[in-house]
Image (cartoon, rainbow, N blue to C red; front, side, top):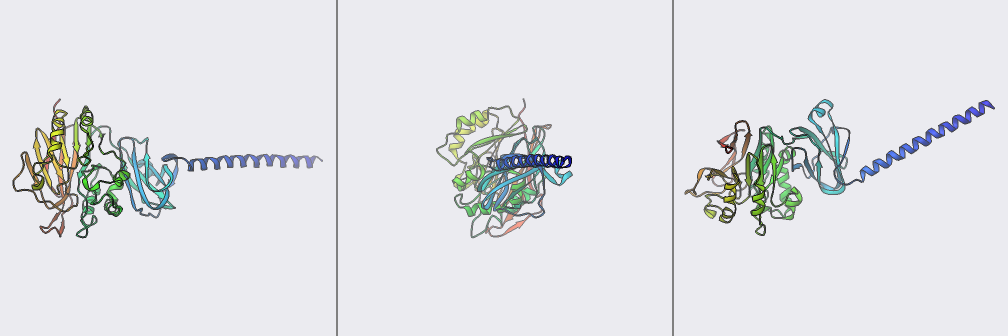
Length: 413
């Protein structure tokens, strides 16, 4: 009888253990299901191994909106999917060959924008994107520093001209050279990223050309006349005009395309800051020697130039004219950077007032390095390739071919 009682007690004890395990399992399952059904950008911790085989999505992954403590990783898949970004600080990644944080967009769609937040300033992170059982390769980016030196890139008019040439044949040459630059925090495109902003195939070619660059450096776009479409805003999630800071510099992006926009009051307020450096970007040039628009867009010059002068703007960057131009007026450097891949423009032999230098029939970009200790911004105009006079042939130049270097100085206190 005693033996039977012990057996019964043992059975009851095991039953309680099984019951407890079952409850814990159901609770864990409920938590997992709840997390899976959460809204965008749900952050999780843990360890995720780097995928051994990588796959390429339709678009991206590409970065936008990077700041000192966040960035946005975007991707377009070929079918509606849910997407997860696994990421880790570089120190953790190198030590463990894995990622310790993840963010998931659980909404089934093709185009995803996933915010990675609570990042550390001036820190390199590694990441991979996963969807439908597939994963991208390992990519990395660096958050903006809160102070100190930094480098950024400016270029524009990256559209192609089919059937004469595609973005793969011209723009990709520039984008790949930019991707090879070290310690670049972001890229600003001065507009006309594509030839027809309403055509998805145009964006397919853009993202194929910028595959490596876009996965490592956030692109901040300025609205170009060829970009005019809802797709442009869906892709980059920016306002027509906006601004951001990096260390001791302020960047203002204006819209010269939408004639209904009144940005003047906003611009005055936006530039009323104490940053050491102030840079402005918009598509239509304020100064140019293009024969069809000689002198530049007078309406924007009338509306904004006095504000630029009054608020201490150091440089204004534009596109639209497919050449490089540089002008100096009232201690502000005006630069046209339309050499990202579009068909070349021919400038007038007579140059407009303030003319400093120019370059035609070339592909390239500007590399700008801010040195707060010296109070300077070194600008290098990098030539990537030259275009033949008939516009049909492209000659690739050695890496690091510099057309000219000049230095901007921060205003004295």
